[in-house]
Amino acid sequence: MAKIQRRKVTVIGAGNVGATTAQRIAESGLADVV
Image (cartoon, rainbow, N blue to C red; front, side, top):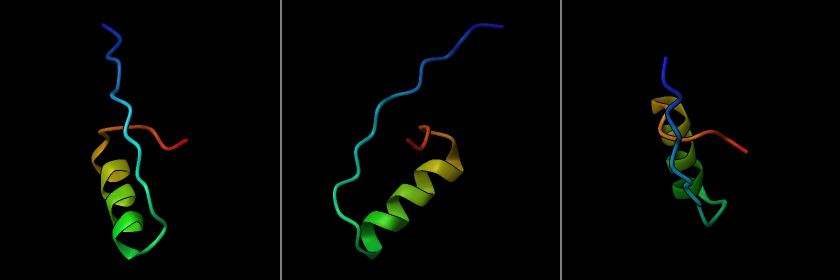
């Protein structure tokens, strides 16, 4: 099985928009949460 490298995503802001964006990215598996 080939290793797939995930893209780096930076979410700036801790408000509702930033929190929702980070949650959706994590749920969809587009990036890891660090």
